[in-house]
Length: 267
Image (cartoon, rainbow, N blue to C red; front, side, top):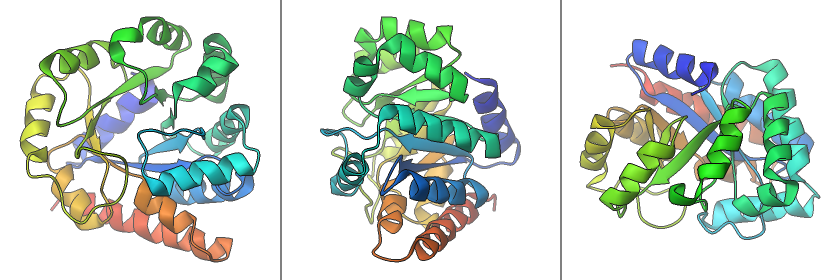
């Protein structure tokens, strides 16, 4: 785990709360606008930033984030530009930054070149949903060489063998998907999410964050009592994509982040 991630989770634990992890797509709808929107997340209380790497076939994502990827690609956003955006954000904030995306663009750039760029940009972690931990040995080794943590996902349907594989491969945190299906805000939480989180955290070598479906401070509070971090993505992406001036979208993103952070405050 990177020093920034370790310090972040330790600080949140000392405060008696889960870390707030916010996701926005890099380059959506343009690089300049996404920079303003991600800065709004960081300045409004996000503890960790997930920055999306756009890809044409985001199989783990629902329609909101799929559309964000399409807008980013239509604007001409490249993986190299997302890394440059991460570097600019790093100059303004010491909060951990995790890149989230799919394996194809990373392989197209080349794993070595990608992780060199991550190290240069001071990216803390990488999340690749379509990379099975059982096949990630070389990927994890390349990440470790450049000081980048790896994050893998588990779901309610994960087998004991997959849980063991993720625990062995993850070096940043474990991302627990609270629902089956793709990303997207939901009104209710899965009934088994709490029990699954308790069991997963009991034997986890690193922090466990929970995501997919969180859209309000109340939901964040409910889930945050049982996780080391709470991830919010689609609800923020939807506000970032509203047909309004950038200033209004920045304000909407900021307001939601503040609500989420308030929901995670100790009571």
